[in-house]
Length: 226
Image 1 (cartoon, helix red, strand yellow):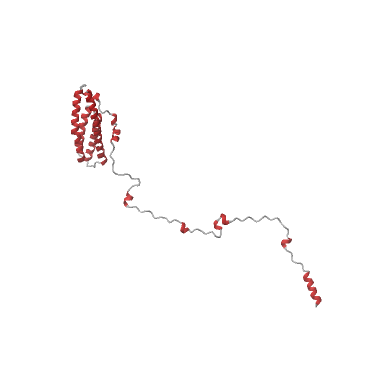
Image 2 (tube, one colour):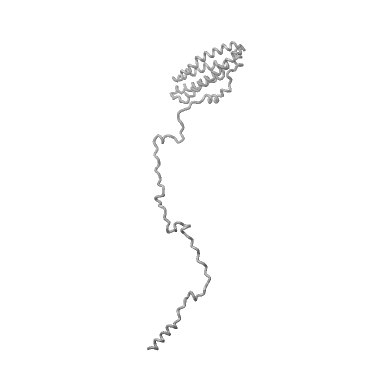
């Protein structure tokens, strides 16, 4: 009984412990493991603390189109004032080349009277009387749109001024005559007279007044030399 127990103890102590395969296996040079990137820095979404933005909170809801009033819908985008504008005296002067003409063509006028200055002064006096008669008639025809009477008065004044070399006044009367004839044709054809044409006529009146005053000043110089 005692001998059997001693033999078992010796057998246990002589048992070879199992070998460790890692310690007995040959050591090989293995490459180091690849470095792992910190996704929490390069890709915030990889961070456990990253929170997706609320798409519903950041998205902009489309605004409905703004309603326009009927007046705004009818008005063009780049609209300008529809009321007609009267041309300036200077604009018409440039248009017809009025300032290139002489106030008084003395040489031509003296040729009409064979060089008689006193006679010419008397004729200029008659022209002034005609202006005082014809010009107010032109103006009075305007409100009533009596274009026939208006252009005939301008025609009469035009001829008298042209015969005495009063070129600028004559040209003004000519433009009033032509415009008056055009407006008369519109009325005869039952067509409306454009407001722009009426404003042009008023500017022509201002133009003839300007150049009549200029002519009167020039005439005073001529009389002092006669």
